[in-house]
Image (cartoon, rainbow, N blue to C red; front, side):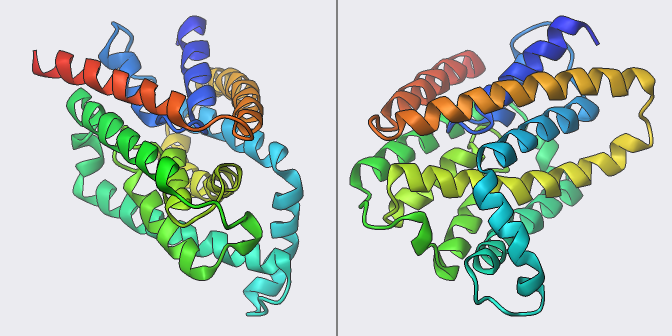
Length: 267
């Protein structure tokens, strides 16, 4: 694969994975709006690995807390902060895994990879994010995360498997609806991404490994490295801005892009 395309895919994935603008939708648009071929599953897995390492590094304190709590969680002892975090992340991930398997088995995941679908989801879920951000309370922080809230956010996260929805965007929307502050809603959305990316990456890897070769491995390593750097920078900028700026700039971008895509799709 050309180096330019590898870097382009990596940067698009890295920048958009954790912003509420849909990384999957933007990756699909690269081939839809240009002469470039689809990057393929191997590169998809590689850039997801890059963004996975970025979010783990950025939230390492919380991640290490959750990892330390896994043994207690597995024995049914949800009596520490780490065990509670590990348990809630597991609960929040289940809906996405179940819905993802359903889409893959039925073939709907490929059927929805269209400009029309992305245009509508960009527009509608962008407006929903704005509504939730403007009307949502700010009386909860991440330490208040409960089983009930994890289930609700997990169900919303499953909806993000529809291209253009944005996994981080829909989780942030759900968090704001539930009363979490902008910063803490985003933090929970980012932590929820870790097991979800691991699960989706593992599923794709099963198919990729059988056809991988040295060239694919080299391309994947390059893409993963650029995606890691881009994701880390994007995360840092967004989390800092959320202390003083709302999600409105992202909403404006989503709505504008949605309108343009729908105009192109229906023309």
